[in-house]
Amino acid sequence: MRMRSIIAVLALLSACTIGKAQTKSMHQLQQEFVDLRFGMFIHFNMPTFHDADWPDPQAPASDFNPKRLDCNQWAEAAKSAGMTYGCLTTKHHSGFCIWDTKTTDYNVMNSPLKRDVVREYVDAFRKAGLKTMLYYSILDIHHELRPHKIVPKHIDMVKQQLTELLTNYGEITALIIDGWDAPWSRISYTDIPFEDIYRLVKALQPNCLVMDLNAAKYPREALFYTDIKSYEQGAGQKISTSENELPALACLPLQENWFWKPKFPTDKMKPAKEMVNDNIAPYGLAHCNFILNVAPNRDGLMDDNALKELKEIGKLYTKRGHVADVKAAEAPIISRNIAKAQPSTSSYSDDYNIMDFANDDNFKTCWTSSPTVQTPWYAVELGHEQPFNMVVITDRDNDRLQNYVIEYRANGTWHKAFEGNAPSASRVKIHRFDTVWGDAVRLTVNSSKRLTSIAEFGVFNEKR
Image (tube, rainbow, N blue to C red; front, top):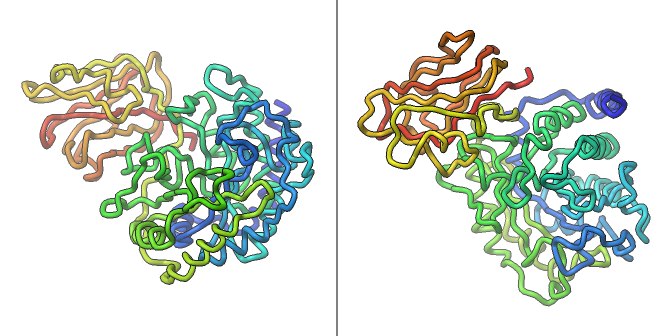
């Protein structure tokens, strides 16, 4: 209760200061973000001083020791490339905080530097006329915020740290979150409740976009747990420049790794021409902002060869600013899927593609109806009557489902929540409605192009 009271007070104070600016619509924020076009990712944290991007989580704070740290150099380097913003790794997976946090002793104020790097970064970039964004990792091995270890104190720590970052450092354009609902982190949106964190961020800074690096899992046709679709290209997450319509972010490191390595000063980097012609220019036309990581060295400075490459990018990148109109998209899906892994039933399935594949939290598997069934149906049990106000159907591919009925069961009787044609040709069909109570939800398909095949069937209760 004390933690919630503190957060509520901080949120109110933040709203009275940062929140003085008029709250913008989601569509306006997304358009402004895409119009920023090109920015600098800055991976600078404990891994900088080790040979691994995931160093020993018990590495002492004394290892973090940049003796010539100059965030003004970073900002000027970003400007030379034509970048419009920066994004700094406030905390990476090893849990070291590079701001003056009150939540843990594992922070920069207990290092030899004893200076708030986040403060110096935001001041330097704003002085140079650049926007500021922050990166924050949910996965935190030092504090054991990892699978099967999460307890309420971890959720409180995340909320306290984000409250500090979004209260003490002025206007933050976007928060990029990592290490959450990813196969390699295995921390779900239930372990750390996404909707609670999302609403905290919006309470502190209504105009701050929330991004989770989750494009590897979720379909590109809808905003699942993010305001901006985020693609980590180095991990094989490639955006389609011909088909993408949602506001997006694509990231890539200029050097071989995200964090600095001793070979970087003499190593080859990705060519400036490639960065401009294959990334910045085509992505802008596809509603996608491109963020290029440049890793500072152990002195806290960017290497000469990186500075040279950034200047070359600035010479080649000439068409800046607005190049494409972003379409208004459905509001992001932010609440917990209460149908996930619940018991399900269906009409006869096609071979082994049985009903369990439609709510297994895996968008690459499907329940597929047998071709012998004229009117396929699928139902999921919720265990007990509970409230919900949204159903999301992710089709196998675009424009397959044509006409269907969605029903919910209350007091043993089925009631209609929707009947008619699919709301769009998109693969993801989002249905929001007034809150109802039920213990099961059923889909009955009247018409479908090709066999009915559902990748995921989700039921949600958004806090409205």
